[in-house]
Length: 198
Image (cartoon, rainbow, N blue to C red):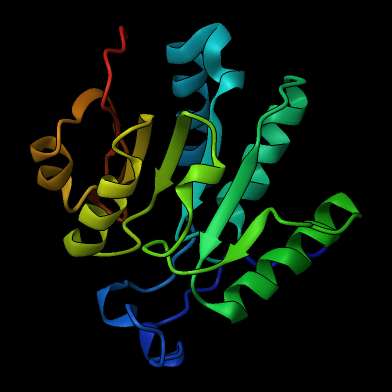
């Protein structure tokens, strides 16, 4: 089994022909412990309702979060709609190859090659969990929030650079998962646009 999720992809090596590429950040894989901590925290917060939420990784890169979320759901026998949205076709192809290598079956529509600003969020249920590992700037975040405002949304925000955009849009901080990486604090925040009791 071989998966390629670790190596960074600097922005200068990605296609600049994409409409919103100037608003994106470099690809850098999320830490396994952050994904696992987030899964446990969200599962505890939502309890029996966890399975009624669709899971979406925005800026899914090489697919690490989606792959690990699938594995974690599988271990608990949880059936959840899980998808990754990524605008780089090259990274989506790597994600699909990683899925096949890991699960020995085609990825189907789990990985979508599309700009998040043009993605049709109406195909999702009214409850969604969104994972963000600082994939893009505040302008794109605002456009995403506009598209999801009618839904019940819990956001897992790793390296929360633009937290103020969420707070100004009606999201509240539910929980902080502390993490130190390379001597710096990179917290993961859980945010929601509805009342969640920790």
